[in-house]
Length: 84
Length: 263
Image 1 (tube, helix red, strand yellow):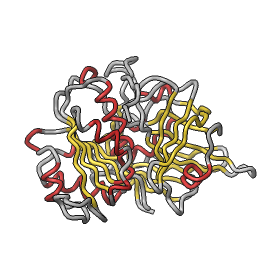
Image 2 (tube, one colour; image 1 turned 60 degrees about the horizontal axis):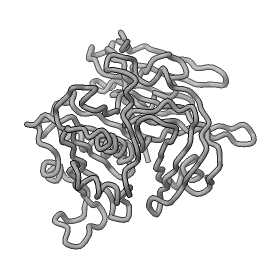
Image 3 (cartoon, rainbow over the protein chains, first blue to last red; image 1 turned 180 degrees about the horizontal axis):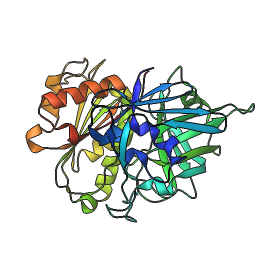
Image 4 (cartoon, rainbow over the protein chains, first blue to last red; image 1 turned 60 degrees about the vertical axis):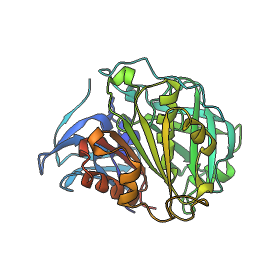
């Protein structure tokens, strides 16, 4: 399975956050570049998702969905700017 | 076919939060379903509490088996604007878990669980909202035309003055989604170009084959005009085209992409 892009996160994140994550701007903790989350690369690997930076390909976030709960790791996101 | 009565979502201005606040799981009823191509189907849902959607947004469809097994897939929305009528065009993936059901089995009157509208990234809004005067280049690979059709429809319905051009890469004429409507829109404000990968119509100036950088340069608004570009298609198609556009001088920040995965 190849990757899709950050747009694919919209549905899952809408269950967690009260704002549209795909339109938010994140800063990569690895390379420092900024970009909209919709522009990231998302690798679908059961049972979760791996979100990678579009500039340096390092891992921004990991999302695991199991029965009744979601675990979200944000190891590679230094900050997130959310449109008000 | 005449274009649908779409209207822009005018309930928010650029500074306001996008659609996520209005996103929810909802139940839609199939009010129309008909073949779009030999492998795709147009499905029209009535979703009574649908808040409207921007052009380019998508929704998730969730199917639940009798044993409780659930599967969920994202589909772009072909319609835009206010109202409870939501249109999808779904291409059947032979190995798919959801699309064969939607294309082969789903009946008028059936209920469907949908989550949306989703996504504020791959959307186009009229000039009256964005005040962005730059031209717009849309590039579709196969069924990737669906969210771009929503943009073209919204552009036409709002009589938006932005120059709009669509480059549609498709296997052959029979695989073109919304062919009649696109040809009609091409007579009023849309510049429409096709690139055929498997078989071109007779007398077509470009021989059939995979899209090339030369074709892209010939059929896309040049970088000197600084167009905003929306590309939707398979991952391979999108990355190929986006890479060429950068080589042709387009700014990465002007290119928005929507890839639909591995197969």
